[in-house]
Image (cartoon, rainbow, N blue to C red; front, side, top):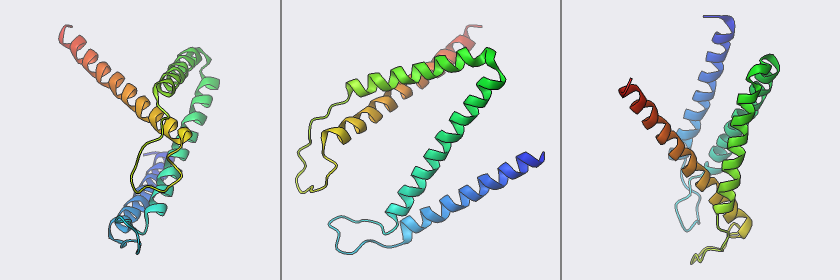
Length: 148
């Protein structure tokens, strides 16, 4: 095991430990008093940790992709095609999303607005499209292996 892989393993275990502790706090930390529905005390902390992990993952992914393009310019076309496909999927998902306000009895929050609804719909459609691509890829790979 190299020195870098040891460091990365320690970082991974540290992130996992923090996630496990926050998950235990979320489920055992009690509930916010006076709420209509059961709301765990550590919901905001848990969601902020998840946002931080997603943001770090996105930043690291983009940085490594840029480094990969600089170090291997021949593979840049493949990387740019992948990025283009993701942009097309995002645009298609956004165009499919609906921004009609929902009729929710008892909801007084400010998130039932067209911009939030359009973004949530785009994320859902994007997830569905990517899931479909994954399933088709898995089936295609397995079927091609069967006929070889």
